[in-house]
Image (tube, rainbow, N blue to C red):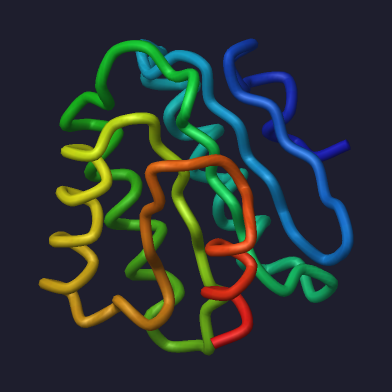
Length: 131
């Protein structure tokens, strides 16, 4: 059990399977404390030596991340700019959200390491991890 577990929102779950660290969100309307806990979860996913890739499943999530949450995600990303990051696939259920995430990823020069997909965890995501 991690120190952030008790602070995570009930709408965020995670597990590890076959070297993949899965994070699932079902609601983006969370408190400041919960945002920070999710940030710690993301850091742990990147630090975990047994993790080869990360899947963030937002397909069932309701609402939108706040600006505060977006700032935390930028801080988490910045922490791992100096080491070899793990590949991250974000799953969405909306083509526009997928395009926005991929545009942001390209603008930061991270398209080889992070990509959004408008589908479930499938062969296209696995192929990205193997590129």
